[in-house]
Length: 342
Image (cartoon, rainbow, N blue to C red):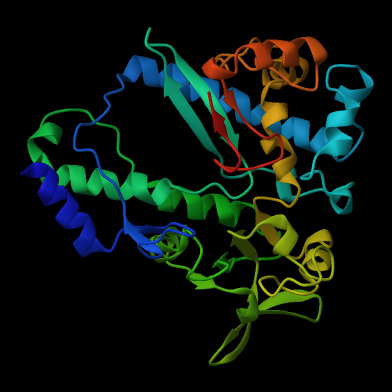
């Protein structure tokens, strides 16, 4: 009964996601499990510390790859992985994003083993999505089981949009006293379009498409009914290749011509920064413990799932001998594309 009530609430709230190529149509109601996963405060503090450690090191790693590549020269990270990565953008070499931050928003996938150990399953640093469903899940849970929250110190999640907007304003060009922030979406057929609109609405900012923006006089402007309005920060939910047809894919109709020139000049901020996906590589994931040790001098706090790199002959032989027990992931693909379950 409560499950049906929760499903009906999600339907009435219009909480959907798109499934590309699904026979039943493009939009589906978000699946909701009414049984919550409880994480005690002490355990959460350890997870939080591990996540902060991880993203701090990955930001340093990305900045190093686009500048001196010290980690490569010191033999900690293999050069061939940089050269073969589809997400290493040569056009981003030498870039210095505002305040030195490359990855502003991260979606880290966690999994709990049967012995209770929490592992990091995947780092999502390109255009991570899903936080809107976290916020809406909590709202539905409060409606379905209000007594669960009575008298219990459950940490809130509803202040996420406020923190997100403060972070976006923090990276605005220094000349912007009251920064204008927008959410850049590829459009209604994107799988996370609900989230783009939801976060924009919650932050009190506009959601725009590439055709709504134009570069003029060295700045990015939004087209409005009152004329052009300068844009200072773009929370982009478009992949790197489609951001600017003059810099990346010339056939892109989703981006803004000339955007990267404005970005290089420090007159607009982008979150996440272009090129961040180089640390989103499945093969890079296997090196995160070494990356943390190299840049922070610390042991990893949240362990990786045991991972084997098939480019290594010995590890490849182990993988081939145990295909029925392993999950095979293509190194340069994001999300679940191309995965083989053993």
